[in-house]
Length: 84
Image (tube, rainbow, N blue to C red; front, side, top):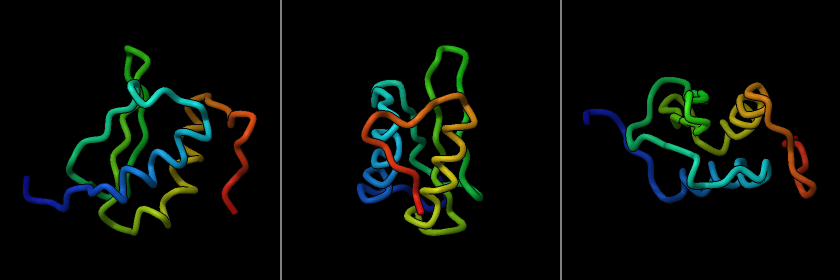
């Protein structure tokens, strides 16, 4: 690996978003290496791969992550509120 890798703060920021969708953490894959502007993709087995961005702080990327998850067909859980 030659790029920047994610840290615990990055993972917690990702989980803050995915937990609001009530997505089981066992179905989420997050590669250690950050890349580009980040991405959210669905795998054939129903799992989700989330690549953290290297181009911006993870907290700034949270609304983009939320949009990406919604684009995969997920809805916010009962306690979820949209990011401002």
